[in-house]
Length: 339
Image (tube, rainbow, N blue to C red):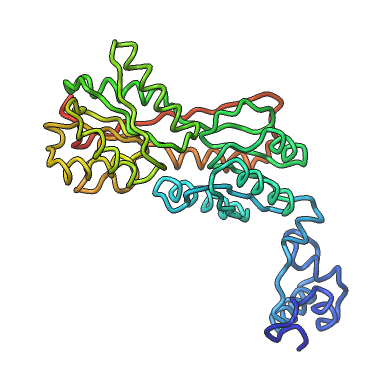
């Protein structure tokens, strides 16, 4: 049984046709939904396919039909709770509509994202979803021109062609500031990161503007990447000051978890009696008993539903910049004093 042995090349449809005693086109029709083929021929083809270990080459078929079924997910920091949840939500929904999710893991910088976008062209991806980094505009335009549906998540690029999916960072940051003010906090810090992503910068700037509108100046700490350790280090630096803050808005929950542990471990501070903390994302850890973090929930499932519905509908790129904004929901737990 040539081709059935391990280490040999894949079994071809022609080999199946020869064993079944039918034409090559009969094999193709057998494995094409809705195609006309007699029951006797179908049975012979399926028996031959099982004997040889034949599987349809959907990639080749898709390329012939100019529909590869490949959706590339470009992401960095894939091990972080938020990113892994988003990837899980999107990939599961893609599988449900028979699309193949291809993850391209990047460092998030411009060059690595550009390299990833070039890979999507090499693999004839049907669509690309960018979760991290700021891809070059010219390269995005090339992807759109090649027929790709490009979706950018939490970016702020006013480009023609791709669709931008964002959450309302401004409304959340405003609400976070007023949460802390209603709790009686007056020395407020923002715990941010050096990542400089549009979502991080957007939350930080919106919070500062909300504070400025009320006559408050906030202290901003950026001690490293968007990671637990950076939040912990921010606590060590901010809370060692003589005018240490009595509240902090952390632009992600991961930073908030580190900040809370730093405050309690290094300084023995009581939360929320001495220190109030608000996060952003509502990752799983935010609800753990050890944190009980008051935060803002991103509607990951709704965003994933929207994205995959767009792809399933086969909607092409748009002729003008378009942004779909999703609201976030405050989740009250135990790190902010009662309203």
